[in-house]
Structure formats: C-alpha cells, structure tokens
Length: 150
Image 1 (cartoon, rainbow, N blue to C red):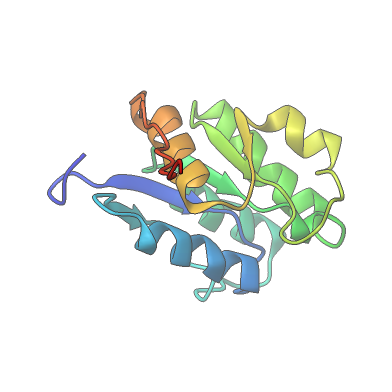
Image 2: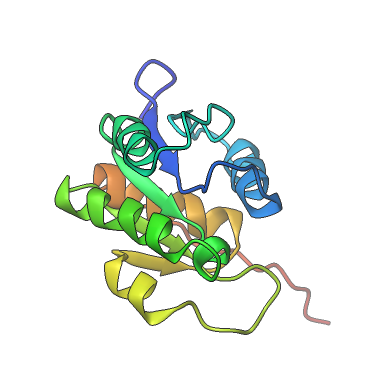
C-alpha cells in the first residue's frame, strides 16, 4: 500500500453523517503510513425512491476493497444496513464490523454474521483489520513495554 495505491474503502451509512462515521476517519487519518480512498458519499442523497437509494449504495461499494460497517444505525435502518452488508458479501468485499462505541452492548447477531472481522474502537485494531481484509497483509506488530527495575 502506498500513496499511489491507497486502499479503497466504503463506510456504511444511512444517508447521514453520524459521529461514529466521522470517528472512523479520525482513526484512519491518525494511522501512520496508511493510505485510503473513501468511496462513501452520505451527503449525496439521491431521490428518495428506495431502489434509487440501493443503486447509489451499489455504485459506492462496487469499486472498493473493503467495507467498514457501523452497527448504530441498525435499530432504525435495519433493512438498509443489512442490504449494504449483503451486497458487499455478494460482491466479495470483506466487511470489518466496528463494535458499538463506548458501550458494552454486543453488536446485533445478524450484522456479526455478515462480517469477516469484528473489531473494537481502536485505531490500530481498525487499520490492521482493514489491511488484513483488503490486501491480506499481516501486520506483525509488537508492543514494547519499557520499565525500570531498581
């Protein structure tokens, strides 16, 4: 992965920009040597026809390498979020599902069943999962803990 060949991503949305949606990009931007291109366009709401909405989502997902799914809209927009994950799966796009931010509540089982990987809200976990799923890159990172013995 390089600046010239960024990972193509789609982040699930229901035609609105939520705090979690923005938080995903904060995490991705804070990662060093991680280059991506966002294909999600929640601000470009097509005509309110249900099929037009689905077609617009298909066009956004089609060129991507990986889908990042957010569970929060599931309660209100179950059909639209499920559609995005089913289309990703049918198109052989891996899905990285984020757990609920700031909550111990589990993600809905139907969403977890459609995901290739479920990750915590952690910049490193998210970036590593995207690299694994999109490009099959193994990031053999090690944590180093320094301590002083007296």
